[in-house]
Image (cartoon, rainbow, N blue to C red; front, side, top):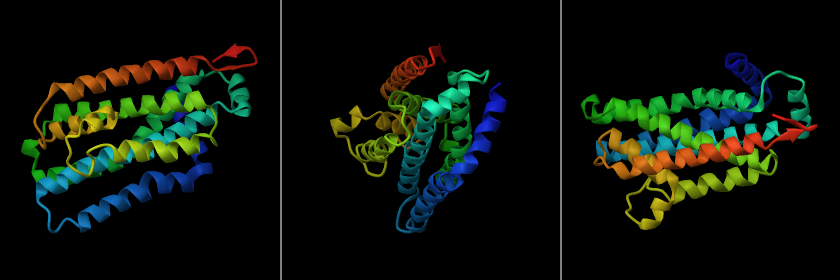
Length: 238
C-alpha cells in the first residue's frame, strides 16, 4: 500500500514541481556551493563544521517546510472528501509523504557527508552512529512537521509558520557558529547537530544530546499521531 501512495505523491508533485525544485535542490545546493567556494582560508575542521550545520539546516528548511505544507493540504475539506472515497487511511498517506520527501532530500545530505569525508577522511567517522544520527534527524523533524501540518490543517496558514519556524530553529542553534549559550539547548536542532557532529568526530561523544533527541522524537511522534487521529470528515474518522 505504501509504494502506490508514494507513486501517487510523486505524480501529484507535478503541480508543485517549480516549488519543489527550488526548495529541495536549487537553494540547498547553492548554499553548499557558496560554502565550498569560500573555504580557501579555512581548515578542514572548520569546513566540516559548516557543512555539518548545512546538513541539518537544509533538513530544517526544505524537509520541514515541504512536508508540513503537503500534510496540511490533506486536511482541506475537498481533499478529505476525496480520501473518504479511497481505501488508504490518512496515517498511511502521511507516511508515504514522509518517505517521499525523505528520499528527495537525501541527495543533499549524502553530498554534504561526502564533502565531510573528503575533508576529514573516513577513519574519523563512526558510520553506525552517523546512520543513527541521520535517521534520528529525519524522524524527529518529520514528526514535528506532521504534528504542525495536521494541527493547522490549512496550506495557506502553514506558510506563515514555515517562513518563521525554520529561521528560529536555525538562528538559535550552533549550525554555523560555535557557542555554549544555555539558550541554544532549548532548541531541538542543537541536539540533532551535536549528535551528527559527534558521529563524524567533530566533537566529543556525549549521551545528553542523544537522550534529548530520542525523547523529543517520541514526544513529536505522539503529537503527530494524535493530530492525525483527530481528523474527521462526514462523521468518518480517518
